[in-house]
Image 1 (cartoon, rainbow, N blue to C red):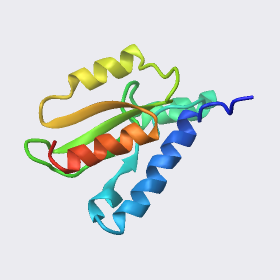
Image 2: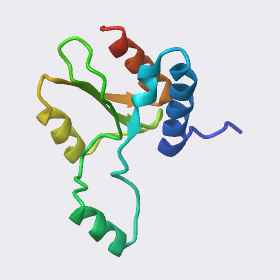
Image 3: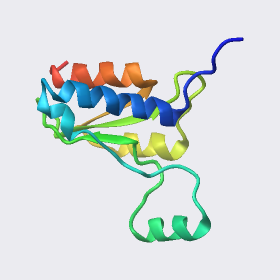
Length: 122
């Protein structure tokens, strides 16, 4: 029997493990942070988070490092297999103007590759 693909949570944990390793040589990686916007929550917590400003569609991660014409990079992470962006995520990504690089990554490796390309100015 084949092992199942990692969950989105496991993929994101892998991105941050890799970021911690890479930060030893390139401190820009240490600036990557998660935006805890998604997930299942009880109604009280969900209500409180909405009052605090949580918005549907906001990407999972942000790298506040300017590169070229960009002020930073937003990353929406999906599972390698079967991950789909929601209409709210699509709308939020589309609303970001040209000052931010915004990408969707399917799996940890694709996210890492896209961050590397961004940091290299590609």
